[in-house]
Image (cartoon, rainbow, N blue to C red; front, side, top):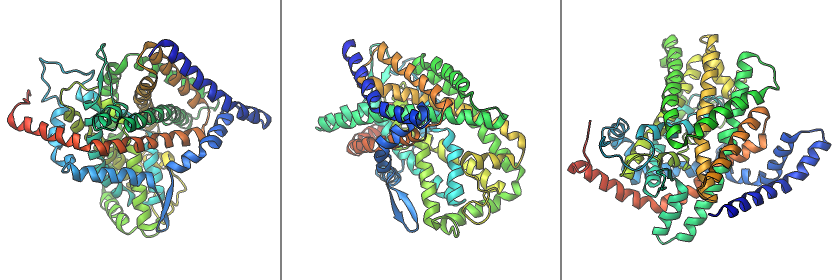
Length: 515
């Protein structure tokens, strides 16, 4: 795309945004509010209908069920059955691929990162504050029984990840520089064109690209910076008003990593993700070990709560809904975001990364979210008649659970929260960049402009509170699943053919094992 067209489109979009925002800025000044209030009101008034539409709920018993959760769960269940339970039958092969046992050391495949680095980059985008704050909120409302349904949904979500990430590699674009652009934008456009639906593919791809940019700037950026700063202030008793210091520090770190491209992102996340997950799970195991005698009663509470849940808000259905919500919102299986990172892997066989990707929901939901749920349940801060008697929810409930064992846990927990936030921003920065370059073309200008925009939003997010913006960006992230899954359903036979072909090559020895 010529430079003039890129500048023209960017300027037009910015001018349109300012024209819509100006009345809200004037209103905020009259009422004594600031720029953050103006932006917040702009998103609430302009896009409130969109948030309500994406998170539309229907009554199920005495609880409210978000249809978007059903959309994601149904896809996970369908793909699990359609591909013959790949999360179980392909688990050993997936682990061997991550370990590099099928990677030819003498013949480098196209791509930018190893299987392990692609996995950790995708994990860094899903393993975040939701694994702690979100689980705390789910248990505060749904009780311990929500844990059971969370685990079940995480296991089913592995099949959705397998499907979309196989497509991500199948239809990726390798640029002359060796860099890779891939993900739903490309398999929706090119894959559906192959199936005789080029018009539908272009519409779905463009819609996904817009949503991934908006989701990256909000939920994958401002929310992370805001919560990281809040945790630092709360833990160390710092005064308010210095969020910009946290924001600038985080922005400098994220910008430095993003400037190195996907190879640098892969190296950083390959170090950060195992470390932060290990520290957090280690803390959880310490709490569990200290209260070892409480494990049987905690497991009983989880099992009984999953199928009985008397007194829980919404009863059995309430526990089920909270567990499903937390799992789908945490691992993002079906959303399509992770396929962008997995597309950059060094491989000639698309299915190899699909198999590696199915490990992602297991680590994110089955391991880390469950660890949080067990700590809360064993610590007993969520015990008693529901709704939660402590009055705590989210990150406050999770923090209280750890601190009930040892107050000094507040410090490593704060460190983990900050690292989670940084890793999430790095991955979502890459996701947003790929959506941006899909719409505006691959160029240094497009690349640099988005990175500067993204890091500016980190500073803004850490400094002020954006309720309406965060609601909108969350809706944008889950709207991605609507564009994504329509195409993935149509392309599922392509994945099935690739899967059969790959397994035949393994059995025949055409694909060799090197370790």
